[in-house]
Image 1 (spheres, one colour):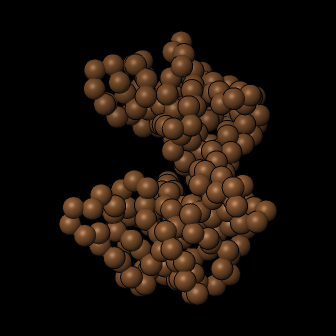
Image 2 (cartoon, rainbow, N blue to C red):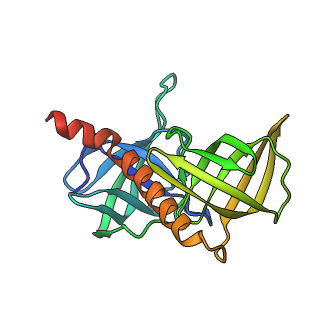
Amino acid sequence: MMIKAGSDVLFQEPTCQTRRLRRSVVVGTGSDTFSIRFVADPFAFEIDQEVLMYFNGRREFMQQVGRIREIVVAEEGEADGPTYVIEPVGDPISAENRQHYRVSTISAGVQARVEGEDQVQVQDLSATGFAVVAAGDYQLGQTVDVGIVLGEERCHGLASVQSIRALGPGRVRYGLRAIETHPHTGEFLEVLQRISLAIQREQLQRSGGTRSQDD
């Protein structure tokens, strides 16, 4: 079995159309199963449910179906959430084409520019768009000039406002999607894809990769 104790496994939310992924850590392994706990809020998995999971293989990201075999609820007073015992189903396959999955970027320090607003926090990102928390007043369907920065990766282009959610005074969450007809969109999407995959790779390797260097 390729999944090792201490490594990260990402799970796809079963009912989410945007294919959001949520991170867990492997807390134990057996001959045919392994156990995980979610880092944040867990998904509401059920016994015998089949779930789609992603993890770091020897050379590339892999995806595989897993079946929930047991759910161990934390004892009263413990801070840990439930532990899920999972049996891998079938063989893992390459998941390097996951560029359209949205990945949380809150802890990655990704910043964007939206119209005249600089250093806007990016909350999540995929290869086709991203979500920001901004102060500006933008309308649904409006075309906005955007840019995004992570380390040496920089890109800019036009995006359409796809969703709006007010969070409080001067704080609005906007979902933005790149406009494919813009001349810079090809390069824009390429950089978004690289940033998205880089963040997913970092999330998967954060615990497993660091530990392997110390072994």
